[in-house]
Length: 454
Image 1: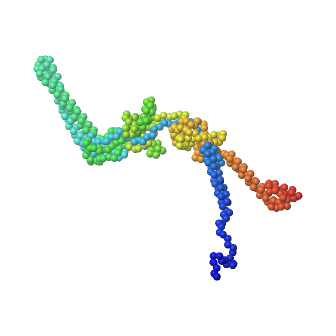
Image 2: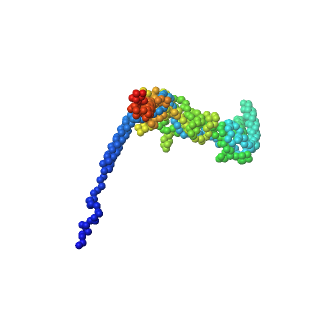
Image 3: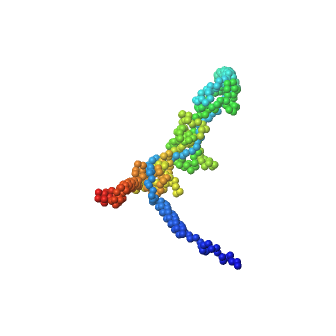
């Protein structure tokens, strides 16, 4: 009879047990580790926030003193100056032209030469003008002779008139003839002077003193008064002027400075503002404001004896208006810029700390800055190392040893000594500690000997 396979078991099979989930014994440890991590993270965050809050309050924790450089605020003189871009303008420029027409016989100058007023520059062929002069001189002599004859005749007629030997009409006619000949002689004399002037114009001379430019004619050229370019151009270079623009806001102070009649010094610099070219004086101020730029044109004059300034040259102009005496001054490196404006760090000598002090800045020179308010003369300001400072930070000066460094050194020495003693004690314990039962402390060697009876 067949058996049911679902109720039949093999004789050698193990007892049947139902399936259960495996036991997770590591789960409590995982939860404990997670809790410890969360607590540690929160503790670290709280400590970090506390340190940041202490730093914002001016009490940095755990930071060594910062080595800084200091300088004392003092008093100095600050010049009130105006800086502008100027252009060199010659006092006079003359285009030398021929006053009479003729052929150039000689050119007596070199291009770029410095000439003086009245110096001979060129010579036009003078022969036509000499002939004209001789001709008008001959006419003058002839008319002067006729005038003299008419005057003699007039005197004779007047004598005969007294004797009642000549009519009055003849006397009047002779007097009129004398006056006519006097007019003719006057015209002849003017013609002589004109001819002489034309002859003089054949000698072309320099109308002003200055530097000659590039010439436009050569020997053999026909020149005349109608030539547009002329023979050459002369530019006066000593003295010479500088034209520059003054802001309209500075005009009242400038007018007040020149109202006393005092000469204001003006310095011309090169393009880099590093090399002074010449020193002159303020000359004049224009009478209108340029509406496009909001400036007023001004002019300064320089002797320019050495020729350092050249016409149409661009220069940097510095006009000194006045000088502020006894102003509070600090080095330029001491003033820093923050979100609330300029400030300085002032040294508290007793506590060896710094205080952040807002200041109002004034004029500046190459190495110093005027302080209008915030710092008094004699106070120590930080000039180096200010990038690592905050308000209330500890500092030390170069060559000093801060208290924190000394304490750290002492602590380190103590730790080193303790480690040395422990090493010595441990060595002794390794040798006799088992017999004597000594302690592993400084001086343990002696205790072990006492305990072992030695």
